[in-house]
Amino acid sequence: MKRRDYIIFAVLLGLAIAYPWINPPRYLLASVLLMFCYATVVSQWNLVFGLAGIFSLGQVAIFASGSYITAILGRYLEWSLWYTFPVAGVGGVFFSLLIGLACLRLRGIYVALLTLAVSQMMFILIQTDAMCSALNKKVNPATCVSFTGGAQGLGDFGSFGWRDVFGGRNWIIGDYYTMLVLLVIALIFTFIVTNSRIGLAFMALRDNEELARSRGISQFKYQLLVFAMSAFLTAVAGSFYAAHFGSVGTDLMGFALLLFLISMLVVGGIGRPWGPLLGAFLLMAADEVFKEASDWRNVGLGIVVLIFMVFLPEGLAGALDKLWNRGIQLVTGRLQSGGTRADGE
Image (tube, one colour):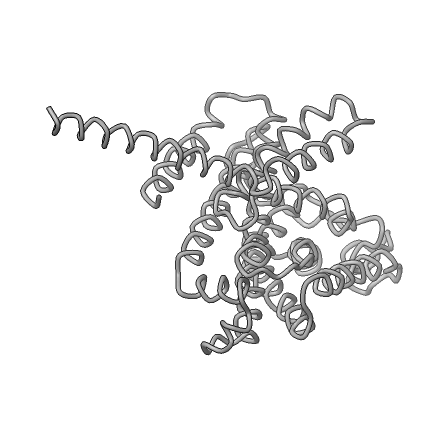
């Protein structure tokens, strides 16, 4: 199985590296880039939800925190956006630890409600931020914009500088490869964690918490650990999102993005290493199809998710794993029957 995953990873990485050089339409390149960003977030969410079994909805808030940290550092302190990546990651970890501490005594739906409440509280605080800060007056005295941008959002905080490297319209290629590197790091990280002793501890707490605790596995330690581990790359993906689009707003904490990302996890396969990537690809492709019928877009996406929940509860990755195993069993059975006949003859 590991050898198969290595081969799949190498093939997909080769295709992703080559894709910009076949001159795809610009909007398709931008869509694939955004899919990489979402897949990175969902892969880290899969560690919390799928591997550790913690029903947290706070991943979108962590993603948004990374975006706002980058926007604020770039606008007010005029930092290079490259330097904001690690700061956003550390800020996301700190924010996730606060959420993790608040959830230690909660289970199941109560964790979901609390993490959702934290996200909505962050949304309200930013949206109602109407006071003009001294830093904003210093940046642009002619306009009065709240520190976080409020409901209008925050912009004018710089870029990666790829226009100077690639020039003109090709700057998006630099963003594409930047996000691809982050996605590769996220996938490698999730594979390492899943196959490590830490991953086994997460799964033990997910499957039978009382037995795991009786064996010396600390629920306090590992719950905080999985929140922190998943938060760094989630916040860095949010940092990239802000740098790529050049603005941030409260839509990053809206229900639409939350439901879209969790649908990717369900469709791809909760707890499956390849689930986030498959789910992101399928739902982004479906989203592109339904954009032509905008009135039916949400209905169409809902039908896709419903079909998977009813007929493929283990997601696309689970269905492909079953097909792979059946194929291996079929081939093995034929080889064994062929060997038996040869021995009989």
